[in-house]
Length: 266
Image (cartoon, rainbow, N blue to C red; front, side):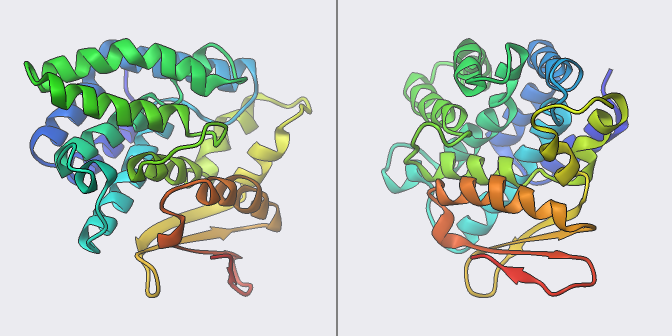
């Protein structure tokens, strides 16, 4: 059963969408198989491995982050690759980004190592099913959307180079989910020290991540934290994703410990 927070995130996402993208989002969030893969990914991530949230809440937050950036870039006249290359519409690009957002981490159900490859393999059939439902008898659109969604999935860990703007959005949207709620359950249930604990401790100090229009560049990302350990999330996770992203030139990045000077990175 979905939590009230998951339902709230879904409502926020749906309010950002219309048309076929909204239909796709509603189908994805209500799909039993997708939800089960997400829940299983979270169980393995948190309970078996002691990592942060990689489940339903995380993937919904990534989708919201991605749509915020997508909309800002569109308002600034920056076209996604499918539109720029005349292979698809804005609606097609949105659907590709949504699919990647909701499926990029389902491979955590298999394990952490190379989980983007596991996600890629597991998502392939699911994407076909979603697109056959939302865009029936539209094979060319299905193929193009699928290719971009798959790129977003395989590229979200920076181990595989990406080239589309859509996949670049996924990289940054994923990295921006670092607020302390993501590490709440791991902090409660895992008391033993483990390799990789810096991720949950650093994430637990991040109070707020804001994505909005920038003054010098289209997108402004601001991170507020309660302790300096949160800079690990910025410097070792988010910046790496931004630098590997096709939207890096469009981003201003700021971070600070609350009550102290703001540091600008980009």
